[in-house]
Structures are given as structure tokens and as C-alpha cells.
Picture 1: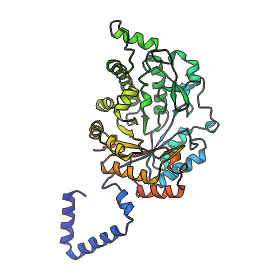
Picture 2: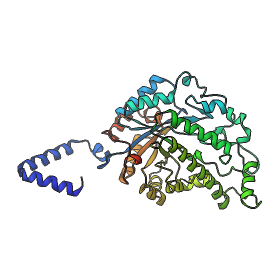
Picture 3: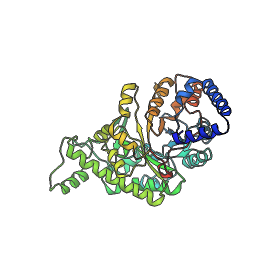
Length: 410
């Protein structure tokens, strides 16, 4: 409570009799002391809004593949006072919703997974999510990345970019990936058309990108990009060193220009659609993915930042919360922290999750989002009931999504 309000409040109490005030204060003290200590520590102090999000993906997770299961999951999230979901809509070279743009370019309007057929998963999330009071922000998970054996990669080989030795495959775990060339106008048009299609056709609250909206910095040596670089450098070829600062900057600036173009296209179709980015810390994003989110934020083309800090080491986790560019972004827009709740083969204990949430709250971030739904309580070495009870303590009361467009203040 702010000081002026507090003194006014006390003054009124004194005027209406000191005894009543003492009784009220005593009762409050009793109530506070009777609360479980964890709940007191975990509750955000004096916040009117807090991002409490979770990513819903089709990788190592079946939450999206059945209507009733999806509905029940959204209800559970609402019951536990989550307020935001980020469902994946672009993965594995396919859209996870019926798309006319994808049908024209890829030859399939929808990911062929059996659980997605005959339904519009995204529409279900928008309808049910809004019914539960959840903010729905579709997540463009794969960005410019596609599986090497995808229809998209096979049908549009000219769209792929390569290393200086001509190779195209990038390993992601055990998976072979290729990358669409983000500098080609036809590739840009395709990605932008997919995004605008979602913004136009669904009552979404925002749309989210991550580092995959950039490009691994070892790529960009395809004929199209090299010719473009030479044209802008009086015939000089790009450095063979993929980490050369000038060559990195040139490619990153081109991606920034596309990000600006996408932002403008989104706003032209729906001005209150939040543009959210969920990248890695700046140095990694820029150096390895040419995704200069710090610059995007300064340009005003990011309205919601959810920084992925998936660390087991608490000291590393804390140090990454305190980078200067993170503090600077917090002065302009809601900045929340992505916390790892587990992976298929890596269980994260609830105690670690609780500690990390508290460190985020101690530093007045806008909130937290968890990667990913299935590991909140379904894939874990701890019992689902225990995990859910713990989230109940982390989020004891409902609160609203911190929305820049609805007058959020740092």
C-alpha cells in the first residue's frame, strides 16, 4: 500500500475510534501468522498483475492432440491461477492449425499427426482459454527452421541456406534440421503470410517468436545471400569466418528489418495484438542466432519479453537476471522469465522451481512462464498431486496478465 494511502487510512481509523483500529490490526496479525510460511514468501508483494504462463508444445507432449484432454488441461491451469498459454502453431515444417497459406506453399494445410485431424486445435484453445480467462498467445516455435526431410524442405530447396562449405544440415539433438533463408523476399513473404493469417483469423491476444526467428550464425553462405552481400559491398564477398563482427552485424540487421516488417503487418491487421519474444540471453541470441532482441526492444517492436533462462545453477540463473540489457528492457516493457519445469529425460525438482520463481519476484520482473506443460506435473519424478499443490502455493490467488497495451507500468 502506498504511504499516503496508508496514513489516510489510519487517520480515518483513529477518527472512528482507536479501539477499533487496534482490534483490526490484531486480527490482521493473527491471520498473517496463521498463513503457511511458504505461501507468504511465495506471494508477489503488492503486484496487481503477474505473467503466469506455460508453453504448450507438440514435442514430447500430447496435450494438443485431443480436444477433451486439451480442454481439461486449460481448466486445470485456470484452477491453479495460471493466466497465459503459449500454444505452438508452427513446428516440424507444418502448421498445427488448418492453414490456406501452408496448403499453397507446402501442399498440406495441417500437420498430419492423427490427433490434429478434423479439428482446429488453435480455435479450441482460443475459445476454451478465453472462457477460462486465460490470455492466448500462439507461439511460432520453429521460426525459419524446418526438419531436413520435411515436405517444405523437399519442395522448396532454393529456399534453404547453407554454411560456407555448402552443407545445410544443422543438428538439433538427434534431429537433422535445415533453415529457410530469412534474407529471401519469397521466404519472408511465406512466414509473414502465416503470421498474418493467424492474426486475422483468430481472436488471439498476441503472437510470440523466439531465437528461431533468427538464423544460426554459421549459415548464410547460399548463392542468393552472398550475391546480396556483394551488391551492398562493392563486389566484396562475406568473410569466411562466420563470427566476423561485420558479417554478423549485416545479417542481424537484415533480420531486424524483417522483424520490423512483421511487427508492422501484425499491427496493420490487429493493433491490440501483443508482439512477444521469448529468446535466450542477448549475447547468445545475437552471437549464435543473429537475433538482436535488445535492438528490437529499443526500436519498440517487442511489447512483451519472456527471457528463457533454463539453468540448474542458481548463481548462473541470478547473474542472467541482472544483465544490463535485461534491466534496461524492464524500464520499457513487461519482462518475464522463462523457467524450465523439466524435459522428457530431465526432471526438475519443485524446490528448484520455487526458488527460481522467488528470485524472479525479488527482482520485480513481470512474471514467469514454464517450459513446458507436460513437465509441470505429468512428466516428473514427483507425484502430480504434490506438484499441483506446490503450484497452488506459488500462485495462491488469481491475477491479471501484465499488458503493455492496457496501461502496464514498470
